[in-house]
Image (cartoon, rainbow, N blue to C red):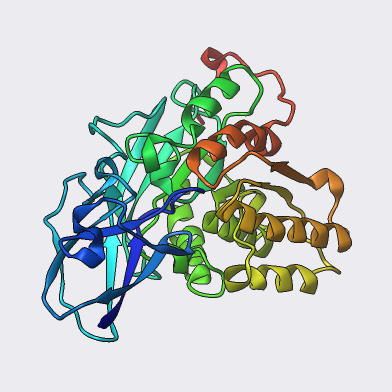
Length: 372
């Protein structure tokens, strides 16, 4: 028998209850049964399986999530040709899956509420990969030419506004919820800058890996670009993200309270392999705590979300023990919530209100404003 390892890296993490499978043209691969060989979840976006093959004959195979309606696709939604496995004892094959057949049955144009601009393939001297950045403008931006706005920086930009680019067709709904809450007077108007993730997401969002380089991109390259092109209030910024994005949001705000006045950290990855740096950082600063607003949230559904709950509660307890002010922190735990965009979208109004829901002064009629 020939023993081989197959490793699958998915472009985006799979939610609780999701499973990745191998299937192929050999008995050991189920003779094309779509759920033949279940893979083991190693991380939120990494799966492994050990195969025992009878001989060294090449075999064709595919990757699914259990049905032919959920088989692998490329980044454009096309079904690729069968993959080919060349068996060799002790061998290891690593595969990247860009998308799934059911993620978007029909691609349409952008589905973003309100006014926005796309900065395509923004380059960084500090990071390996370029990335798209979406800049969303609040209602009334064009009509108030003398007003300046706070800015919310977000990660995983494809997940923030548009269900057409987000995982499983579910986005965070930041655009429509922010617009509705701003127009109702519940939130002050603000700009959102959503930088997309790349193949290096796990490293870029990890403080112990490339997190500091990613922050240099945000602070030294992207923020000056945004402040130079739009009417921002350069002294008022917040930051938000989920999972690894929640981890780097906490790290960014704590390290740079001169830039970020608040952070929303949803399902933050305060786990041993990524988050220990954040705990050490808070412990070291107990005598000089930063002036921040912190929103921490997590779900309790089985799977990855349940794994992250312990770290979220541990961080909340640590913050309380070092004397972080209760009125500057919100911890929200939803036992039903899973590790996916649908759950995070339900949380969006709560953290938006926490960061931008301060009472507003009456505004002058825009017709009375004038540009200096």
